[in-house]
Image (cartoon, rainbow, N blue to C red; front, side, top):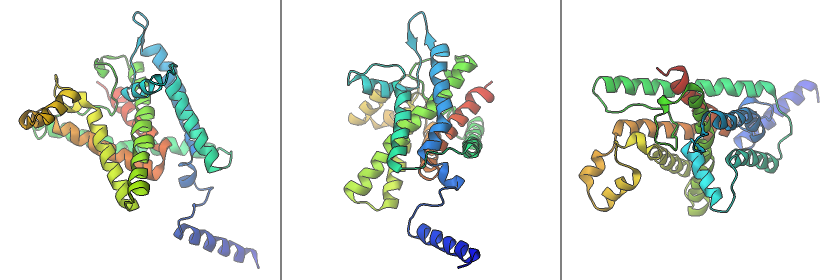
Length: 298
């Protein structure tokens, strides 16, 4: 067999493997950028910058209170319920999950710098559609077509305004939102819902993915209750209106324009996670928040 024949045969074998649901070429950017090792190398600087930034810019030394992303706070409360107290545990969790995923996947221990560089560029490009959507909704608000202030996809655990913080604190919050909100809603939430619908209930894969995307997108929207509900109403009060059948106040308490934006954003992030992996979706989320909170902030 000549060398040309071998190349053609290898191409046919790879094509058959792709049609059969096999793994794509392991040297391809599209494949490597979704793998846990490259995701870890891509995310590690973000995790380190967030942890350092939270100590320097989000910690009030006079009270000892640290402003955090709400998703990170949820993780910390979860660990504390098991008696584990460590300020950097959520960040260590992200690293441990990606390392365990790499070991289980039996991928090669090889990092390609150009793949990591490409992931930065791709994440920045994926943030552009969300920025366009935010601009459209802001324009609609200015024209009286909807009532909403389009805010970043970050949800800090404090009651203070994000825009009142200095820019290094806002940049830190942006990184934390990308890391921990994607960990909670996509890597954990969406994956578990897909597993439930597909493997436990027996729903077809496409329907399982669709249901998981829809549920996590809505959960992501109302996770930002301070943005999607009018001032003075929290999630507990809002659900209380539903349970008491006070439907008039239940629907009147919602900023539907904000719900639309955050639901679309949640679905958008979910689709990126499903088809481009955890690293890219974290980078996209963080890039959007950095653009809104730092680069485009007035």
